[in-house]
Length: 263
Image (cartoon, rainbow, N blue to C red):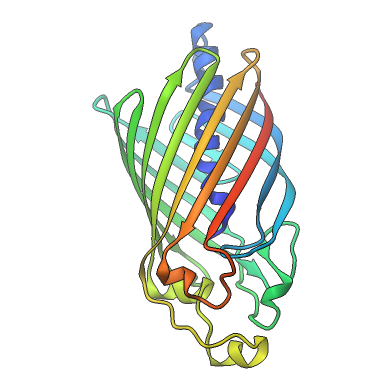
């Protein structure tokens, strides 16, 4: 689990939703076709459990054509929703894994020297949700590896939108994270070889619930094309993860600010 995932899902929702809503007010069929490009600054821990953070410049790329979409976070996929608010989403993406050195493009730290790298993996995410009202949404997702097996990760989330207008949206999201034994041991476990190389004590991570992550995100649309988003996130690691010797801090925060243009 990369801590930057705390805030990016809600940020993507706002970047796409506000811009499309503003253009729809102008009579455009924005939900059918749209392209959003931008750039953001992200501050997050170097890896889940790290006591050091890093600042990165990240691209904002979102494209939609009917039910099909592509963005830098979710990858490529499709999203369908019926009149009752029930929706289903299927996507293919890449988990960049983790380095055992400080990295400028993925999770990693020099404190993981000897732990070895976790290779990138192609994964598929299946999401089922229900927008009960315009301001309340429930969601469950399963992310499963298709290439190098990083194990399965599962997520249940509640999103509340206490304020929304034609130009501003404020969203609060809280999610519980679960992982199978393979996933937990890849990202939090320490086997015999890793212990000998890195000096950490052995740790066999158990599958199940391992974290709660929350985010508060504000999105503002200056014009039908130009917009900005600001988000702060907080993660609390449960005992299944926090007891790992590579976890230096179980309470972690992140922040991101992005500027985007929708064509």
